[in-house]
Length: 259
Image 1: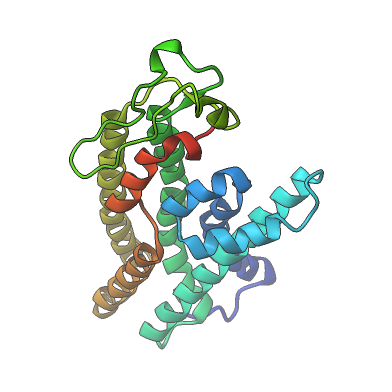
Image 2: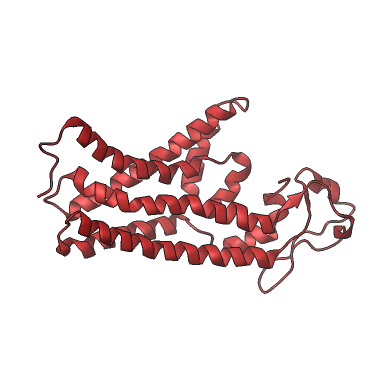
């Protein structure tokens, strides 16, 4: 039996912090974007999380930028902490003779990898894919009247820049060049990176079980808990699906406007 009996206050506090910190790093990503990029984040992260943190971020007036950012990040962190604590509930359910804090600590330590992955995927999505679809302030003359997005396979054709609709697009910026094949390559790379990272997550969890002397009879059930939480995360909207990527590419002039 693993309990926290006999431990002093600071040791017990450290155990709880080890549980809360992964949740904080997992959830804070959801509240970092302002309203302009929140639509993009809904392609990468669960839409419900983005909307919840966006609600708190929009509470202060527009002049209070740092206050709204603080509220957004803290509300996202609360989502992550609740997620980590809930993971601990199921770890405790499997290891009935372990103290909750001790059982949840193991799950939270392994969960740090998913927190890191959540932050890394923002770079893959908003930066690498976005750079292939980037826009600039002034429209090049050679782009006037040309199709913004190539039509390959099932992808929708983009809007045409003409003399008539160029003023309408001016508020969003204008297309310098589109590289949909480059964006698609980064998308494939992000998918490969994400699922490779999932394998690493299970391997690290297995090593944590050995290090913390978790009885072997619990290993499979705990890994099934990890798998279930990952599956829920994916089903809630983590990652960019094929249909979402097609939508992004065909509407990039509006989504990535002016940046």
